[in-house]
Length: 115
Image (cartoon, rainbow, N blue to C red; front, side, top):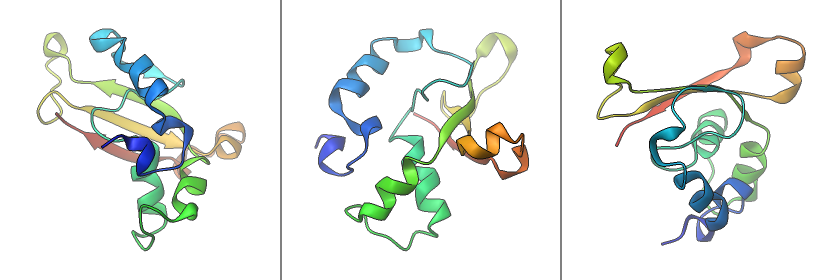
């Protein structure tokens, strides 16, 4: 099943996902930009957490909330640095743009995924 069929959000478009996976393992650690999700889009995971899991996947509020978050930082597993998050996973911090602009980093949200 294509993710686009489950969520109406730009990070779920097949073209976007294909472009990200085109980087393969070159993405690594990053500050800002678009998350290189190991599993499903991390914006959706954050939106589900913010909405306390009370909305279904088809609910427009989930997509709207996901659109309010941007990547702050991502840290991948890296054998050379002795960092392994689960099974070759990654750590993600997302933040709302207005909170980033006002340097309210305590409002950032965290999630992680592994393969």
